[in-house]
Image 1 (cartoon, helix red, strand yellow):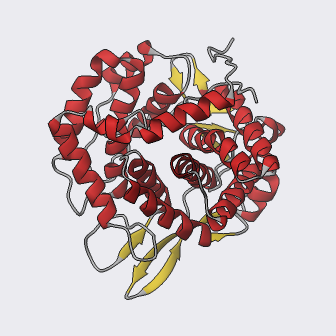
Image 2 (tube, helix red, strand yellow):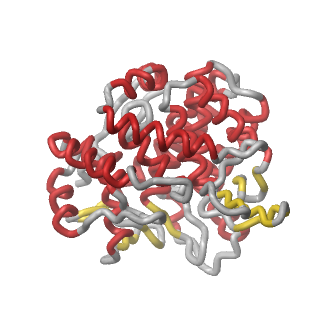
Image 3 (cartoon, helix red, strand yellow):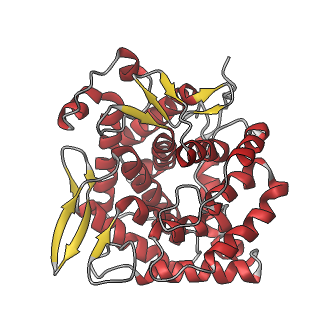
Length: 372
C-alpha cells in the first residue's frame, strides 16, 4: 500500500493561504537574519538587472550574447513575487506578457533563445510540463496579489493549460509531434502523469511536481477570469497527477523517471537521484525523515553555476522534513550565495530566494485529492 495520504481540502482554504503568503513577503523578509536579507537583496537585484526591455529575462548579465532560458526565468518570477514589492509584480507581469506572446504551437510553450548580434536564434525548449506549470503558477500568484490578469496573460494561461492537457490526455499526439520513436503503453496513457518528450517518452518526478503546482494554484485564477471550464480542467488534471505520483515511489526512495507508464528507474547517478529525492522530500506527503538521513549519507550539495543539487535545494527539503537542521542549511546557503555575481546562473539566484524566504515562495505540497 502506498504511503501517499489522501486529503480533502477546500479550494477556498488553499486560495486564502496563497493570499496570506503573497501579501506577507515583506514580513517574510523581515524575519530573515541580516546576512540572509543581504543575500536575498543581492539575488533579487541580480534578477531585476537581467530583465530586458521586451520583458524577457536573461540567464547571466555578462557578455554581448543574450541567453534566454524560460524555465529559469519562470523560477525567477516566483522569487520576485515573494519579495513583497509592487514593482516586482510589474516586472513579473512584463515577463509573463512576453512569454504569452511567444508561445508556439503545437507544443504550447515559449522556446529558449540566444540573441547574437541583435538576431534572435530559437533554441529547443526543455519540457512542456515544467514550462506550462510554472507559467500557470506565476500567473496565478500575480492574480492573487494584484487581483487582475491582462487578457494576453490569461490567454497564455489557457494555452499553457491546454499544453498540459495534451501531455497528460493526448499523449500520442504529443509524441507524434515530437517524432518520438517510442510506442506509448496503455499504462502511460492512463496514469495521469505528464509525459516529457525527448529521445524517449517518460514521466519525470520534478516536472510532474511543477506541473501540479501550476495546475493547483491556477484553479481560482481561471474562476476569477470567468473561465469555469478551464478551472474544472485544471482541478481534474492536478488530481490526476497527484494520484499518479505514487508510481515514482520505491522501497528506499523515489525514482527520477518512470518509463513505459509504470516502470520507475532508480538511477545510481549522483545528482539526478539526489535532486529527485530532494523534490520528493520538499513536496510529497508524508514526510520521510529516514530518506533525508539516507541522502545525507550518500550525497553532498554542489556549488557550481549549473549545479543540480546546490545547498538551496537541500534547504527547501530540510525546512519541511527536518526543521531542526534547517538553520545549518541556511548558513550554508548564505555562504555559497556570497559568491554570486553577474555571471551566476539565473536559476541559482531564484532558488536561493525561494529557499530562504520559503512561505510566500514555496510550491504547494502535492495532495492526492482536492475537493472542489
